Length: 337
Image 1 (cartoon, rainbow, N blue to C red):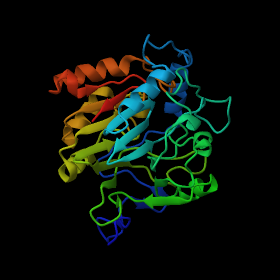
Image 2: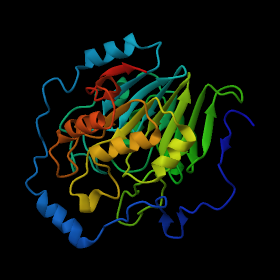
Image 3: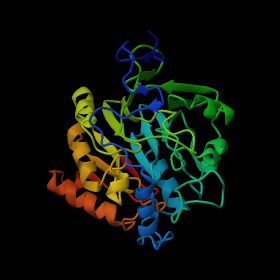
Image 4: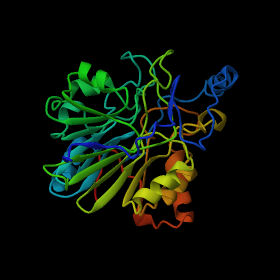
């Protein structure tokens, strides 16, 4: 087996492959997409401020971002670009996750949810990328305008859930690998690959229009290299699947988990965790440190936009994490792993 082979966990037909699309893992909260629920959500959020003011210092300047990246150029590190977008430096490679670096999370520029804080860097300003990780196809995670502008499309390796390779090829990417849950990719010159990436189940859904619900897969990723192990959760609700992931991969050195877009619960409990549930995820994963993401960029839900970090910090303290192990970085901030 070469280091670039994909290794499935089992040869049995996967239970999450349904006739009408992909399904969440067993024990996940059932989806509530009743029209009445959606109408209540629209009514309850009709006066929500879509352009709130971020706390002072929440976004670093571009020069501060670049300075931080340069200072950690030879160290394993994590840089928050905003929302679920990160630059991860691990095993001498630079990994980019869910790059949403545009202004609108929608199919049409100028329409739909708009950023109220800028990304740390735009696509053209990123350093050289070796690996691109996509968790699912929602507009705030798979931004075609950002992907089209990446300079390294012809040289990087893109790892995407099932059903998304065609989209990436159409955008000009050459080396694209689709993964199912629990499939593993090793990136390196031999079977002892210095970077190991495993796609893992999470509790969410996919779709970019009215007629493609769950036609492509969603996942989180375990990244292992340089003696460190990270978990990138993409979007997810809480569920028993996280205990299973922890049993396979614990200890996790850093769990990067969504903590925003959770209200009202009758609509979002099947797809987004509360800050307290994110801490439960981290504990189930066996995570030594926790990082809160997926807030502070666009308004997608009804909770106050900067409530998530306050609740997350409080829940993590209650859950036994000390402050040094509770990461709530500024947009543009780089932290050493």
